[in-house]
Length: 292
Ligand SMILES: NC(=O)c1ccc[n+]([C@@H]2O[C@H](COP(=O)([O-])OP(=O)(O)OC[C@H]3O[C@@H](n4cnc5c(N)ncnc54)[C@H](OP(=O)(O)O)[C@@H]3O)[C@@H](O)[C@H]2O)c1
Image: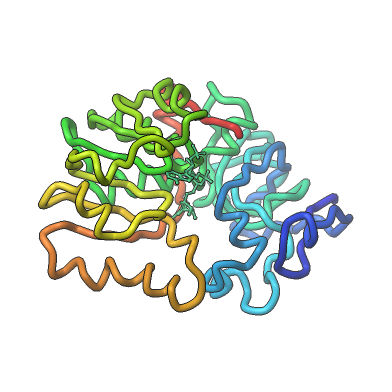
């Protein structure tokens, strides 16, 4: 089969190659998917580059251990292992697993769900990682409820566009932060208010939000806390932009401080799973996937 291969970490145009390799073989618990579309998101850039360095704890310390990049997929089931119960050959599926930038990929049952009927395979392929990250942040970490004032920093990105729509579906009053060229698009997916970060600074506007979901982390912690209600929750979801020791400080400082504050400062890791892919499938009629 044809696959994108990466033997070392580096810039995508330098380390990614299209090559012919053996197709994967399913074990008893796996599903072989013929890939129709592989969605790419910010996390794929980190894993291809192997930076920031801590991502290598998962992807391989000195060189990439998976070889084929890509996590998000939509396609058709080609073959199933003998223990697989939910899927059969011919089913259209979407999900998140390792090595999706290839003609075929093996996934476990828990990493997949049936594709939402209303979406194309291309649209379904951009949902898993980004929409699950938004769902897990807002539903599980932020426990957002109707009437809350929620601010999404990075509202025009992969995670942010789903976060705006999911927060609105929970009944929150949503403010999105993005650049000028994306203001209309963030309104169009349901934001009540949009702040253009090239003109205004949400941390200086005197507003206080019950929940801030920060997908950019380009502001000092004290700035973000100024825009947070006294008992509000700040969910930090990037950590990028800093390197080495500064990266670790940025990652850990909010978690160390949080127990001593009324405000709740949180980080989280979104782990894709079948049950939540089904949740997304069920709300897919109201979610607009944006393909950039
Ligand atoms: N916790 C988890 O398990 C998990 C899971 C998935 C992703 N993530 C993380 O989530 C983060 C966001 O991912 P993504 O896929 O949404 O990235 P993305 O698609 O690249 O989006 C980046 C966003 O940042 C905005 N932005 C850039 N500069 C900004 C500024 N100065 N002020 C405000 N906004 C600015 C962009 O807005 P404009 O384009 O309008 O400038 C865009 O909305 C990444 O760090 C990723 O690693 C975490």
